[in-house]
Structure formats: C-alpha cells, structure tokens
Image (cartoon, rainbow, N blue to C red; front, side, top):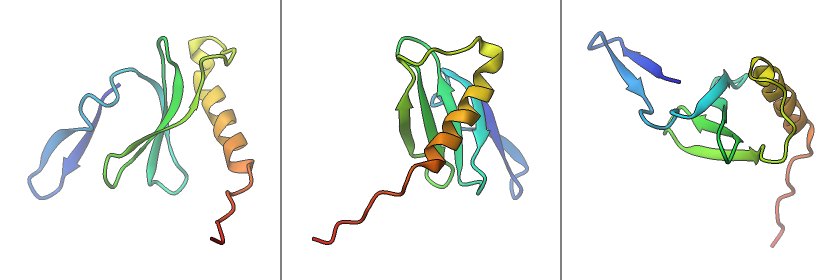
Length: 96
C-alpha cells in the first residue's frame, strides 16, 4: 500500500511514510483525521495506527490468533475491531 501527500507550496507529490506501509492490507482514517488505522498481513498480522502529525506507528492489537475472514472482508473486520476498542473504558489515571 502506498500513500502520497501533495505540497501546495511546491506543487509536488511525495511518498507519505515510505517503507512503513509495505505490508499494509486495509486502511481507514480515524474519525478525527489524526490517524491512519491499517492491518498488517503475514506471519505477525496486527492492527496498527500511524499518527499523521509525526508518522509515529503504534500496534493496537495482534491478529495472530484472530480467525479472519477472506481478504475482501478485512476492512469490515477492521471496522468491527475499532468499534470494539472505542467501546472499552478509558484507562484510569494514576493518583500517585
């Protein structure tokens, strides 16, 4: 998977996060537009998010033991997983 960004000043396209999305299968932006969520295929499949502001990558969860549907349904699986993650309670802040 490959993404490009367009610089309005230079009027040039450049690769966005080159090499970071090589194994990406499906992707979707977060509702607030700050992240790109995507799945990684292969021997260590997982859901990952990339923060647009600084290109920081964070693994959200492993899909290794997840019984996945065929590739045409991965996007639906990713959306379902993200809904599940959003429904989890926020972590409690430490008072120490």
